[in-house]
Amino acid sequence: MDKRSVDWQGPWPALVTPFDADGAINEYKFRENVAGAIANKMEGVIVAGCTGEPWAMTNEERIWLCGVCVDEVKGRVPVIAGTGAIRTADVIALSQGAKDAGCAGVMIVPPYFVKPTTDDIIAHYQAVSDAVSIPIMLYNLPQHAVNELTPELVARLAAVPNVVAIKDSTDDFVAFYRMLTLAGERIRVFTGQQARYGLAAVELGAVGTVASMPNYWGREFAEFFGACRTGDLMRARAFQAKAVALTELITGDGRNLYCGTKAAMNILGLPGGDPRLPLRPLGEPHLAALRVGLERHDLLAARTVAAQ
Image 1 (cartoon, rainbow, N blue to C red):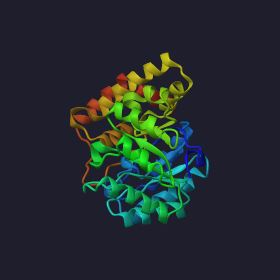
Image 2: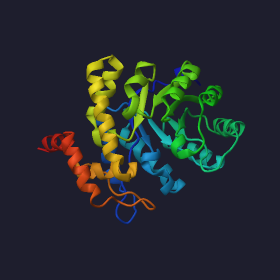
Image 3: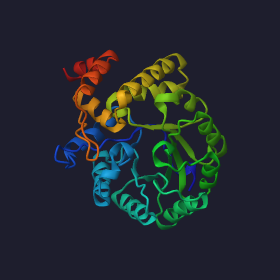
């Protein structure tokens, strides 16, 4: 397999997993999120990615959620499952479960917390590729996963048979661009930083984006990526400024990204639900700050009009 083996591109949400106050997964709300993503012109979806809080779920729950997502999508867009874990055996089991559930591919962050060598990381991905015949999207998230998929490492991982794409969420745009130049001819590059430098990433060759923002920004996020893709620079620059401001709003004053995303959704009348422990729902004054910010950026008014 290589980049030509799949047609993945465009804006994709990293879907939230709505939990009830008692920690149970709310299947109805999750299905609402999947349906909303497709209605908002998303071209693929990620289930049990970081925004979906996979660390708070059992392997069985993650695989079950893959099946729910595939069932709701009904083949309209690709469904990619986040199957990253520390143990290689868990990644293999999760990836096989995702394949059996009907997912089009898996997204794998390198083993976190521990610090394997570069060769260990390559062997990890190779073992998954050998065990499960399914397209693999690498996931570089050094801010949280500890272990960075450097441009040079990605260039080597691009030779692993089932690796066809990467979601690169590095804060370092120079590193992102170097990775794009070293591996972009062999694998599809998605930016995980559409909010910070999406316009530049797409201009330089990124074919898609995976982000948490579509959970609450919706259709306008798809329009943002569309403007980048078609070269509508004036519109894309305006959207980029709004994306930066919304990111600062969601994570401002020490707010956790995932809790802030769900809180924003709930304020907007969307099915965000609660996070699962160890994360807790936001309270005041954070909710008031989010409400003011969402209103200032016209998201609250837009949702009110849409609901009428």
